[in-house]
Length: 258
Image 1 (cartoon, rainbow, N blue to C red):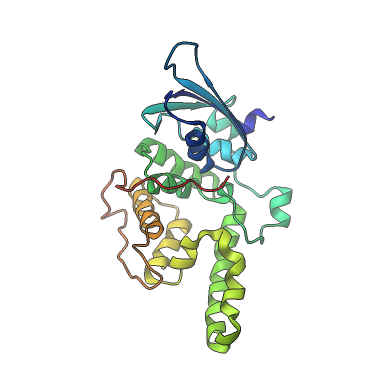
Image 2: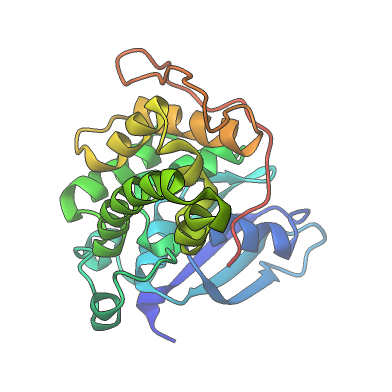
């Protein structure tokens, strides 16, 4: 397997299960192989893991999680190459280019700032330093073509389906037109049509995000996952000028499917 798609993790607590390790790194992208072993033969020895991802972009994101809390311990994430060496622009590969209009979005297609927000929304503690690195990488290398294309297409699809509602509700035209967009996550589907949702979209297209913006986005994600925000809610969204810095006060939830 390519070293560029592999990360090594050390300092895992002996009480942390393999599933917890897999769930933790699944936010970065699809895992093809995971190996977890004790670092020594001593009782209660810490564990190490080797995580093989399907795509290089997932490994790049995983490197941001160095010195991040996993269970009761802080883990260290390393790779054969430095983050700067492997963090090239997120340009479309040949397969991405021919399929960038595909409706399903993988974790690897999301901006790193969005992925970090997902970690926070699920109750993980991520340092402001790691958040700032994610923001810097998004600013330096841009966002994947598939993600920006999907956002643009979703805007068009949303406008089209709103018109369809008035044309023929009995045939559920709107449901048919939007059924293929589940890959954008119900978060988008719930939020983009509301006043709050427009601010959500702005989060992904603006380039001057700050750490506070990531925490605010994490709160929005957590509220939507818990059902606190509905399709018609107009809950004010805190901006970088008003949102307090700090970890989100949310309970852990299930990780995305790998």
